[in-house]
Structures are given as structure tokens and as C-alpha cells.
Image (cartoon, rainbow, N blue to C red; front, side, top):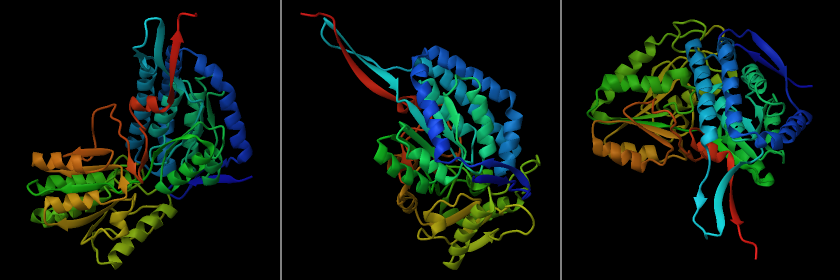
Length: 458
């Protein structure tokens, strides 16, 4: 029997140990989900929505416990962890309301017939969720799947298995038996689930490497795949903006949650006219970030999720320095317990460096100085990823050209984070496929059937 042991990334102390699911566990979870699927699909949509509201209430009652688990398992500052739980319950309630309203349309046919399109659940959804925001993302995928009449097998990340187990328990306890099922484990467990012919939809948020493997497995079974994979999200700092304000935006984009956000800023292109002032301000901001455990309310920069991930982040930084980048601050593994890594600013970077071309997923701000907005836009667009991008500019024409040029799912103008609720985008290229959020996720979780009902029998 394989086990998963989780240690607190801030202290190195134990969090707990869980059994890693094997093929038999996956088989049992999928079988339970498939057995429950016909009955759950037959439940009126309003009743499914009411059940989702009850599940949201159960999570709200245990929100403090869930947030503490997130902080203990992956290091997120406690206030941010609470925010993730609140976002998750908000998403569940959103889908509880939208689910009963979700439908298709009628068609204009002959007067002696009725023609219409209906949306039906696919059956069973395999939700393979990440560690960096384990409650909010799981609530979105599971909530959208369940409210549209699908059953779910949830496989949380092996880095946050206790969080995933408690969340699934709270969801499953307010829904009929078999509607939401749990299987814990590592990559081998996830592969067994993705390869199972009983999974009709596989929804995954995580690395590009894992997403590609899931797509390969799904091609063999015919399962529909929804993927949000990695990104190398650019930030363009145009001439004419305030360097201090731009540096604050860059710091938020690069260092929030220690850079462990799907849409973190991964590379920065700054116009030469303000490059030095911008770099000085960004360096100063990085140097004063309060580093510490997520349980300390004063902490701004918590630890990375584990030692393996910290080693990967540091390797990218070291390679960049070897290739000519200059360390403005950070760039060294600190002594002492935990998986802390300092906020790091690199200047003199170029797009051939892995720290610019690939996803670092750490508190690193690699900066390239450019001579024009056109140069920045061309470099930002030249990536195999297509998740998100940010542009800081006073020039409306530049903003307009940027959002039309950048082949990404989300373009943010003059703010690295934020946006109206309900927004949904489709990632491109190596960053994935399909809607993963918003009302459109309900469409992704349902298949469309066309019905022609002839009223007259000759």
C-alpha cells in the first residue's frame, strides 16, 4: 500500500499521511459515480441547485478548518487561503443559481412538428485539481459538473490531499450517494483515472506536461477534455506610465502567493525610457516584502509548496544568471527550515532563457528592456503558451492593438489581477483548451441533443 505524506512547507513538520489510491480504488470510485449517474441526471435542475446551496453552506461552516489546511499543506498566507475558500463557496452558489436556468433553444421547423435542442449531462466527470488554489478551483469544476446532472470523481493534488479530502467529504455529504466521489493519490493515480473508459469528461487544472498526458489518454477512450495548463504570462510596461506604479503592479503579479498562481506574471518587458526607475522601484518593493509562515498575519510572501518545487525555481534562476542575467535582489536559497525563496528580480534577461520562455511558478520577476512598444508586443506574443497577459499603458491605441494581437485567453489592461465576476476564457496553444470558469463551463459539462418530434402520424 502506497501512502502520501505531506509536510508543512513553512516548518518542515508533518501535516499528515493518506493512502494513495491504486487502480482498484479508481475502479470503485468510477463505478460508484456511474451507478449514481442516471438517478442524479433525473433529479430536477432546481433540486440539484438546492443541494449545491446546502453543500456551500456546509463548506462555509468549516471554512476556517479548510483554510488552515490549505496553509499547512501548501503555505499560502491564511488570509489568502480564507479568500480561496470564500471564492469556492461563491462559485458553488453561482452555479446553484445558474444551473436551473441552463438550457438550449427551440428551432423553427414545420407546424406539424416540434424541433428543439436540449442539453444533457455527459455522465461522469473526472476532476483532477491543483494544489495552488485547491478549494476555489475544485468547487468550480465539481459544482458545474454536479449542477448539470453529472456525477464526479475528484482527484486532488498529492500536495494538498487533506484539503481535497475534507472538501470532497463536505460536498458529498450534501448530495446523494455516489454523486461526488474521492480518490487520493499521485500522478499514477491520476493517470489511472484519466485512462479509465468510464470517465466521460476529464477536467484538469495543472501543468502543461500533465495536461498533455491526459489528452493522450483521453484520445484512446473518447473522453472530452477540459484543460487549463501552464503559462508564461507576459507583462508589458509601456513608455509614459509611472515607474513606481508599474513596479507595484509587477510586484503583485510576480510575488502574490509566492508566484504560485496560474496567471502570475512570468516575464516582464519594460520600455527603456523608464527601465532603470522601474527596476529600482521593483527591487525596493521585493526587498521589503515580509517573508514568513502563512499563519503569521504579517506575512506577504509565504513558502513555496515543497523542496522539489523550490529546487526547480532556483534552477531556472541559476541558469538565467549563467546566461547573463543580473540579480537585483534575491536569487539565493535561504538557510533554516521550510521551503522559502526570496522575491527575486532579474535584469538583462532575454527570451531564450528558460526563466522567460517557460513557467517558473515562483516569486521571480525576470525583466527584459525593450526599445519600443512594438518590440515588447512582438516578444510577448512569441510564446508557445496562451493563458493570459497584462499591458500597462496610457496609450489607448496600444491597448487596443495589444488585446487584438495577443493570442491568449485573458488580456488585462492596467491591472494585473481583477475583473468582473463570471468572466470565462479559453486558453490557447500549450495552455489548454475549453472554458474552465463562468457560465460557459456549464456548456462544457453538457452535450447537446437535437430532437425532431413529428406530431402527425400518417
